[in-house]
Amino acid sequence: MKIFRLLPIILLGGAGLAAAPLKVVSLSPAATELICHLGGEKYLKGRSSACTYPPRILRLPVMGDFARPDTEKILKAAPDLIVTNDLIYPGAEKIFRQRGIKVLFLPCRSIKEYAQAVEKTGRELNQEAASRQELARIENFCRKYSRCAPLRQKVLMLLWSQPVITCGEKTFSSELLRLAGADLPDCKGVAGYFKPSLKWLLSCGADTLLVFEGTGGDPAKHPLLKHLEAVKKKRIVHFPDADLLQRPGPRFTEGVRRLRRLLEAAEREAQ
Amino acid sequence: MNKFFNRPRGSLWLVLPLLLLLLGFSVDFDFSLTQGKTLFMFRLFRGLTALVTGGALAVSGLIFQTVFRNPLADPYILGISSGAAAGAAAVFVFFPPALLLFFVPAGAFAGALATLAFVLFISHCGKDSSDKLLLSGVVTGVIVSSLLIYLISVSDSQQLAGVTWWTLGDLQGSSGTAIALLGSAGMVVLFLLRFYANELNLLALGEETAAVRGVPVRRIRLLFVIAASLLAAGCVALAGIIGFAGLVVPHIVRLLAGSDLRKSALLTYPAGGCFLLLCDRTASALSDVREMPVGVVSSCLGGGLFLFLLMRQKRGW
Image (cartoon, rainbow over all chains, first blue to last red; front, side):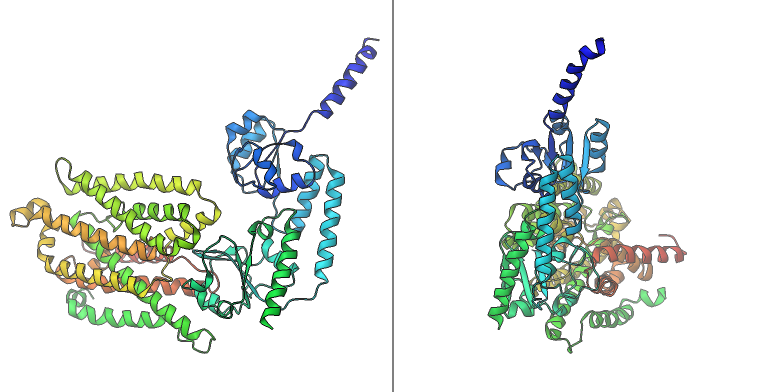
């Protein structure tokens, strides 16, 4: 009989536990954007110093740098979940797991991986409906843009000018560039971001140079870049927000849209 | 072979054509490319940078090994590289990207000079000796390295890429004026080295022996430490930190031509130039699209070559 008397208490307690607010710390800027996009902002209790978007999350306490969490601060905040990418210092991850804190890894190097991140995050934050909506949005967007006419432009993406660092195959940015209808110069299968050799840089045949805002001075005055055909012909596209094309977050669609517009304008100008 | 290298003029006849040959290989003559002429000019400047930097590093290393009587001494032994790296890293972290092109070499040179001045100041407090100078340099280098590590820890990914690539050495993009300046400085130090070769030979036997023979030990030591450090600082400002060239080339020359500075001094400069040109050419050949850091090749190639010569060495060091 006693057990029946306790039943309401157990049920209510259980309900109370299920409704207990989830405490989440995000250490990756892309994950922070995704959490907010899916409506999970209310769960966020901390962020990394690199998490700067959306601007309203700047009020959250900073709990370390990108991939270098401040372990003490995080343990003090006692979150239920830490969302990060696979660049996190492995020692820190071990400490969190030992303290019973769940660590969710969201490696995002492609649109496919981004979709997986959407699914995982939605599940963890009980935002399945929003995650399904986001997946449908990406799918529609990708379908629409893959049908667009190709731009027939080889675009050299300049990530940094001192030293010159560009984008190779199998990167999120190169995938977005292709989605926008353009292509990379032939980098003979070199993957990731790399420092190009002089010979390749001068002979890669890039039609357009894509420069991200704040990554260096004027390419026309750079001792190396000024010799590129694209720079000589003034086919330089300045992209205002690097995060839109480099950060694997929900804003990548906006990045592709803007890039397409800018490249189309450059093509029209060249004709 | 050693007999041949013992005659400096004879060995120069071998080294100089080799140098020109390597320089020729470094320059790309493929004018069929649309950018053939530009590429040729860049390669030529890059080859010249390798030549003057390699030569200067080798001469600087030779001076430090002689003055400190230490086979492990290299151009960076007094913390020059750490100071330069900290100076360059400070520029990468605190300066806007548009100003990096000019301020990174300037910051590196200033960092190297500040470190040198500090080391000289410390070593001149109290009793003055070469061991004290060496120790002050090594310890200052460690202290300055911690500053570099701090700067790296606060840098973002782009700044980190800049600092990392700079510390790996880069022969690309040097201006003609900078190359001419470093080349002239190298020639002046080489002339000094040849002029004071007898005094330095005596100093290599020990400070007391040299003093007994009338060598102004303190003055000569200070002159050459400053000259070699300035040369190293110039190299670092021009091409970043290139390891092993300054350590291994003087040893290779010593193995081939003996330790008499009257013979080895003139040979060291072109040998250093040859070595770095060879490293640069190898780095270019190893990777077509992605730039290979010349510092990686110089360490591997220099280390391997040195061990090979060490195995074949029959007489004592």
